[in-house]
Length: 171
Image (cartoon, rainbow, N blue to C red; front, side, top):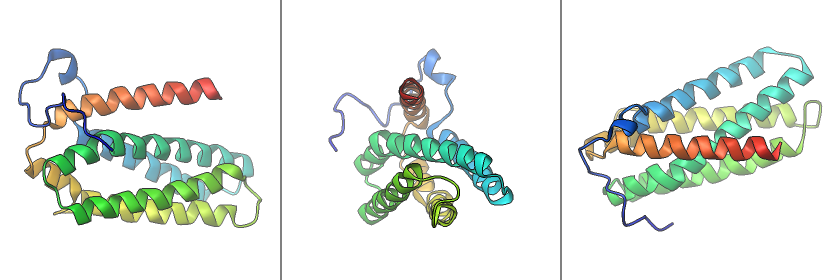
């Protein structure tokens, strides 16, 4: 994926409109906590309709989350020199999650292995989140690289809002 030449990942000044958006790390961590709560709720219910609703929320949130990371954060991290191995592993983990998301979205509660797929997706996401958030993980490296996390957060929030609107129009 090409990195846009006009984006400055190290700019220190903040425009007033962008200052209101959460920084990139906070935005992503908030997404992580929301999805974790939905996975917990999924595990604690026996209602097929509630499981379907939660799985739909989880899958949408993860599709949007992975897309904004891949379009905005990951290229900025690569440009800033964050280790290729770490970035490559994150890409592969996203690919695995996307395949499972597609399978979950194609099925519903009561289908063979459907609950297991949601559970395994939750485990994959938990692992991925731990790696991103741990000391020495991608988020720490992004902070150390002195990326403009407010600028990236504003870009990510705008893209997330756009993707969520597109999704609602399709449904």
